[in-house]
Amino acid sequence: MRQTAAVRSRFLFLALLLTNPAQLLANPAQAATSPPGYVLSGMPLIRQSYNACGPASLTQVLRYYGVNVDMATVSHYTRPSETSYMTAQAILDFAPRAGMEARLYSGGSINTVRTAIKNGVPVIALQTYVSPSGQVIPHWRVVVGYNDAARQTYLMDPLLGYVAMGYDDFARVWADHRGQFALMYPPRLSATVRKVIG
Image 1: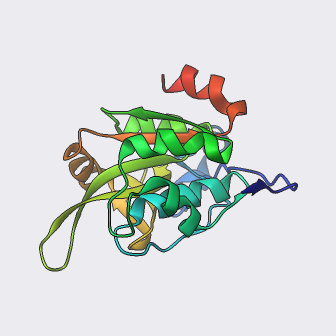
Image 2: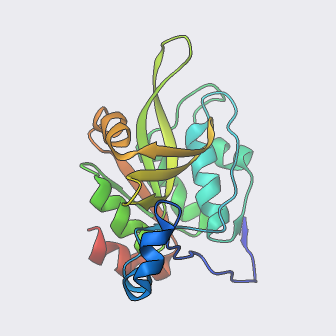
């Protein structure tokens, strides 16, 4: 695992104008100062293998921060077997191996998402996924953005791909796991994370 030398812009503040561009254009000053949402840029979508939503999510976040690592390596350090789920504790144990820090939380909300995303930190959320056969599965996915005007979150889901999910549905599938989430970030963001998230 190594950190790439080129430091790209880690997040892009996007005024998501698709909901009502005419209204925003009518008041350009308001549009410039208070965009309805933010989306992080520079994160690749990593598709998971069997039960590997956790390692895939961590790999996405590591790549976002410029750490070149593959999912198989992350999986090796975060799951006891190739068919096991990744526990939340595994994130804390693994982060230092990648030169990162990590913190676990519960009680996450849309406000948590807003705060983290505005500060350039993706949210690794544990939520419920219901399979086509009706099986209820705990599922890690990465939240990369939100749009208050559209009331949508934007996810990099290792199983489903790029997903836009409404606030109500997002809160419902998160509540199943008490709003549990993790943040994994480079040490330079440690003070920011502690200040804005806790």
